[in-house]
Image 1 (cartoon, each protein chain N blue to C red):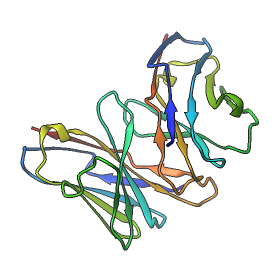
Image 2: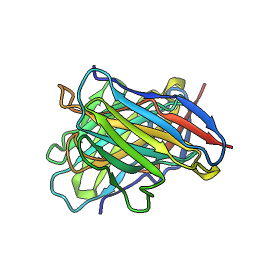
Image 3: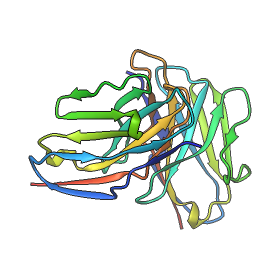
Length: 115
Length: 116
């Protein structure tokens, strides 16, 4: 069975600090896809990134970066120079297929960025 | 880009009544849609997979007779919470996969249900 663990329930940082959100996953599939979503207070999920199991290259998008390591089954997310607008709940998720299948979500990490 | 809408965005109903929530893919067709439930300060849990033209597939522990799902067309899936009780109060979110350029799953804005 697939499982996603986000051990950090809540993280508080001061603006401009860097912060890393951890995600550890379990799956028996050799092909799988990992996602990160942001859920601001409004509730609507915002897609951040999708990564397939064959691509271990790290990715950077502006202040966001992701570190995918199959050896440790981890897909961590780092926000550089955090801003108050980054405050939200962040979910890591796993799917057997790229987009057509259900997602298994982690418990989520609440990120609070204080000014 | 692809958009998924939900209606209503929030609803308050009395215990024992039924509530229907709509999920629409606005500019693409979706033969499959997914319904998730999110209790306060918890994660999203998949309730069921809605399939156009066939019966929905429910996750273990989800009551089929209580949460009725109808995939009426290629752009509309509905979730009806029958005989709602306070413990059904939750945030219900639907999603639809889209094979466009970004090939991602699009989520609706969610429906907050409060049963009094």
